[in-house]
Image (cartoon, rainbow, N blue to C red):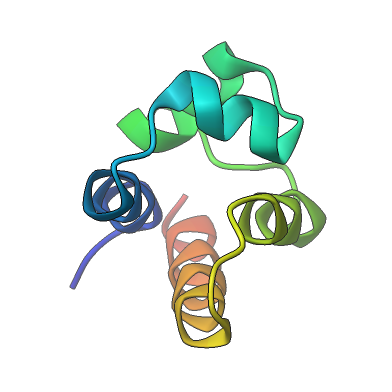
Length: 77
């Protein structure tokens, strides 16, 4: 099973979205977003996860997957 960071990284790769572009779309600092993608940090709350999904215009299925993996990753920490 993928982690939150792996899922987000794979989404960026599939859609060919750079961190810089994602940062602009999500209105989240590029360095912070980079830490989410690398697995060094998790978003502080579900609101940040929703902000990422909305900024990237993720379809509902992918948004749901991202939220589930966030909860699981948060529980592991």
